[in-house]
Length: 276
Image 1 (cartoon, rainbow, N blue to C red):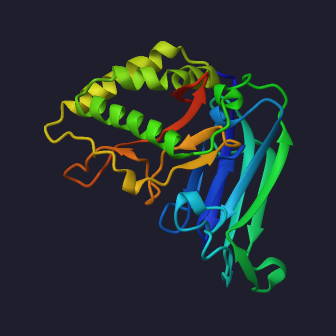
Image 2 (spheres, rainbow, N blue to C red):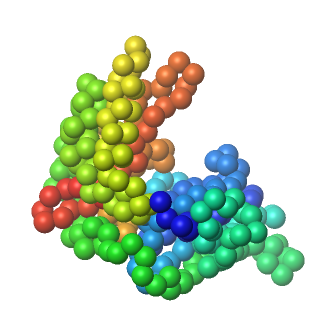
């Protein structure tokens, strides 16, 4: 267990914003998504210089979040009273996020009424900042993975692997999931100083418990819903759908709740692995 934690704190008021660390999307916030977020993010940080970026009023689907799309592109609009802020902070173990023990390391912010006057801004809009955090947890596997194009062959490969995971989770078999996500499990354990076997045991128990539910099922993998997007300097593919939820998801339960599995794939030595 680390003696201190590096935490992302962020908030979006009057607008939707997507928050990124080192070109990897972390979370969206906004009026219908929850305004605030605060949590440890060791697994997103790299040794040396780190970039914190916010996309304000992103495009309609994940793949055009930053560009706004070829047809619509960026558009000028006036947002009254909208604002975002995000910061990286260091907290000693046992302290409360947002409390007085935090040390701010980097902050980015934006207000629609900058200078007190409403004005038209071009959206999507990106604000960012950088900070050198020195040595942290060493290099992650995705940093040295192959660069990707998301061509037809790559999409076909990812579809096959998602179908494999869907079938295994549907049947309550965690082993194919563990085989594809082993790199991520190992690196999350390194990020937070936990034994890898703890995460493996948790995954096995979770899959077995979920699949024992009478109404358990995993939604079929439907390529028509895909909105795969490259990130992490084109070394990661986020397996996300057009509705902004992960592609791999369970069928809704009686209360409408739904388990989802967020997956970022990399290709390492020609093999696809879940690395984030």
